[in-house]
Image 1 (cartoon, helix red, strand yellow):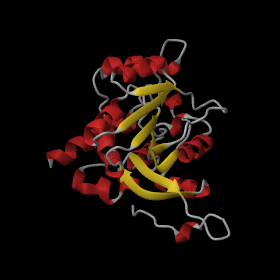
Image 2 (cartoon, rainbow, N blue to C red):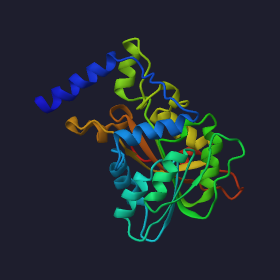
Image 3 (cartoon, rainbow, N blue to C red):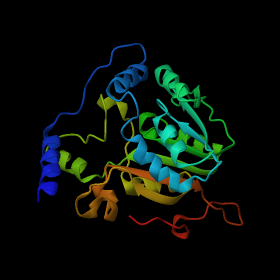
Length: 259
């Protein structure tokens, strides 16, 4: 029972914690964010290998990938190890993060996705935005631009607001902590799995696959019922097919990955 009880005790402890409110000094929030994170994780961000393993399922050797919000390049470095001859490119708002990504040999350029006139360059086989769109106020505009830039797939990961711990925190009088690192202001938008499916449909995007990114391990619950037992979800998106009249096919006509 110990493998089950230990994470349960940790989860109960998290239910009582206040939302994180660590103020970061500096002119740029995300420069300060990345400097602090690199101090804690100087080599590879701990979530990067797992995300790379999932994304590698959908990327073939020789393909080009643009990672929006690439941070220090940890994810792209892990993906290069998994996919031969990968053409890795990154974009981020933080100069601190970009410097580290370039030091890894990644072609990385500055891009502030919160700016209305921000343009996502096209021509990439895959565009990824992993734990990014919850940070921007106009996630719709960002996703539309990113989808237009991808020849094959747009791969997005977001925290899952419907995670059982988030639901329990509400019952305990606490706001959900959707994998916030330093300060609750980091996340401006939230989705449950059902919300995201409907939202993608509204944007004219088809979900080709879904994967839990932070599943509860006990009894395989995170993979059997990710909408309830995974605190993060990854979605593989592509432009939805159109009818002969040129209109997007209705949601009921599209393939949907099971929960």
